Structure formats: structure tokens, C-alpha cells
Amino acid sequence: MTVFGPYDTETQAAAEPLATEVRAVPLSNKPGGVVAALQLSHLREACTDAGVELGRFDARILAWLATYEATTVQVVVGLISRAHAAGAKQTAGVREIAQRWVVDPGAFPDGAAEPLGQIANLLGVRR
Image 1 (cartoon, rainbow, N blue to C red):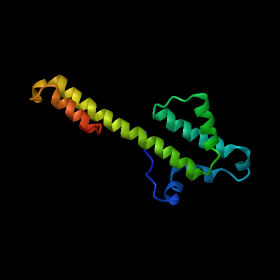
Image 2 (tube, helix red, strand yellow):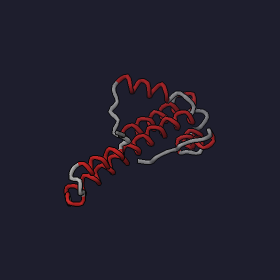
Image 3 (cartoon, rainbow, N blue to C red):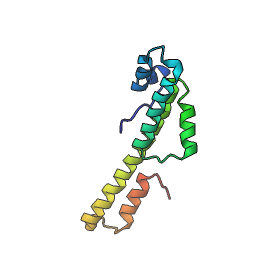
């Protein structure tokens, strides 16, 4: 999944592929819902790539968001992609610790307490 952002300025969001595609839509097509459909497809793709299951109300809200300017939609796409990437990074770290435990439990002198502590640290859980 492509990760977009973070954005400090609207200019940065406007430089992303979504805004570029919107600018390429001929003016004669812009009032006909072509832009909203294009933006909705980007929002849905971001959700699909992130493994987000959409309910009917979710889909309705995405359709509403798709009517906003391209930079606003791009920020939402960026937030979805970054949230997914952050979760995937944590999952990969937990998977790595668990794999080490399975392959070589002796690598953890405190038994299960050490890998569980590492997982807790990775997930930001504090005692």
C-alpha cells in the first residue's frame, strides 16, 4: 500500500496523484460528478488496501467526503494509509518477537516474560 503524507501544507497534498488526476479532468466533465466519482474511488481504494470493511453508512460518508476539494480528500486518504502503515509496523514487530520465541525460546533468559515485555513496549503499553 502506498503511504501518503503527512502534509504540512495544502500545496503538499495538491502535489499527490489524486489532485493531479482531478486537475486532468476536462472542465466540461467537472460538474457532472466525474471528480466526485474519481475521489470516491481513491477513498475506497485506500480503505480496501488498508483492509477496512465498509458498512452502508461508511460508504455514504465516503461519498459525501468525495464531494470536497481534492486536497481535503487526499488528506483523508493519507490518514487512512498512514494509520494502516503504523498498524502493519506494530504487527511486524510483534510477529518478529513471536517468531524468535518459537525458533529459539532460550534466547529469552526470563522465559515468556521477556518477549511479552518487548511486545508491550512495541505496542506502547507501560507498567
